[in-house]
Image 1 (tube, helix red, strand yellow):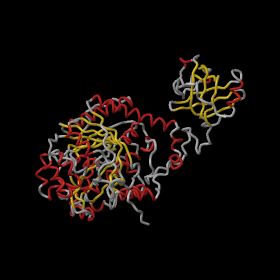
Image 2 (cartoon, rainbow, N blue to C red; image 1 turned 90 degrees about the horizontal axis):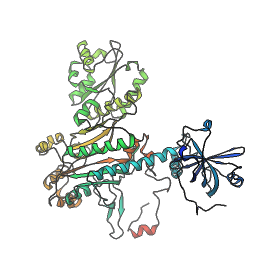
Image 3 (tube, helix red, strand yellow; image 1 turned 45 degrees about the vertical axis):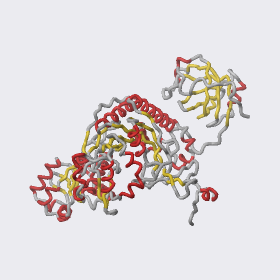
Length: 594
């Protein structure tokens, strides 16, 4: 029943032909997206990765081929040979790049049939469950919108490579089977057959290898690398993902940021036709927390936060005063025109703040008097002071959260983002990049009873803050030589200058509670390498999946990954992970306990 492709070679893609090609004989291959039988004529929309072309089977041109076309169904695989013909003016389809032409078929070869797909593959069908799409991802990829994302990703990778090659970077592949050095998420472990009881780990990042490359003299490295993290998946995370990974020797923070800005400018120009204007704005971590409550700020809209802790002693509101007495803060935000919100809407905002740990949300409507349960606890002079600090006017809503700094900032920052989206305050189709610098190097983990690294233990501290490392009471004040790049309120990349001297790296390990023997066992190879003339070096890594998703307007990174995992880290196509044969476990010296 099926034909051979032998002797018939594709001349054009299905998205390539235009009016200028009229009269030309062409060969097209692809899938039948739709067949329409209009009496004597049969129309087929033929699809490949580049687009659609309408092909026509006319019994007056070739009655045998017309009869053969009568059996075609959706997603059958065919090849055709025919003449490009201009469509009549009233049949031109302006929605298609090929809408001015059609191909009059002279030869048809049916290469394969298809079962009826479990869902239609045309983009107007949006009511397809994610589970079904991921189970049949190879069919989902045929949908033009998804195919477009994958092709966009390919072109973005080409642009990144071309730019970095032009900047003197060398692409180096680092090992996938490496050493387990758990400092962040859990590692994916791979047992060694030839060394029973020993395990490789899949890399969470190429961090240590790229530092070693700087010590080797390859002073500008990059890689589009695969990374793996066995963590409990949050929304829009994947257990395996792709990074654009860079490292440079003999550099400062500004050198790294300058290269990154050039890379972003190249990507936006080539992929979006948008001209970015480096250098991007810089905000310190402290500024971000003060103004936005989050370390990934979105400055495209207002609703900036204010701290009003200093005014609270003049109030009679016990709950606020107790928080301040215990070292907490009171964070406030004014929503212009939001005095219109109903009590239910205010309760919803209170519940949202509670999701981020806040014990409550106090509010004041200006009508123009204070309309709030707080009103009786605040004297008139304090009310005026708060109105002035927040810039509040009649019809506005003032909101307050009193808590420890981390909770107050995060909860109010998330409320700001929520209100910005809800009230349509964020200008559409805009891109705002900002660098966040001067992060804390360390934070105290109360559960573990020790300081932990905010980024990772290889980040260098600010040189002027080194004396603060000596005293435990001042370690939380040490700033890191770290920097994150934030796009529209989403962190897309981050990096730092590294510790390039052994004594400083050992000091950091000690501050983190890692004894000398543990440091040698986990990172002895790095400490030894630092003794052989390691240059000052630093780098950055970008989440390539997320960056591509933002650039092409995808709602989830799954839309730009060919075969994404589910939130349970499973592959619905292959049914991985799966059980293995007992013999395979025995070879590895493993036994499963029931």
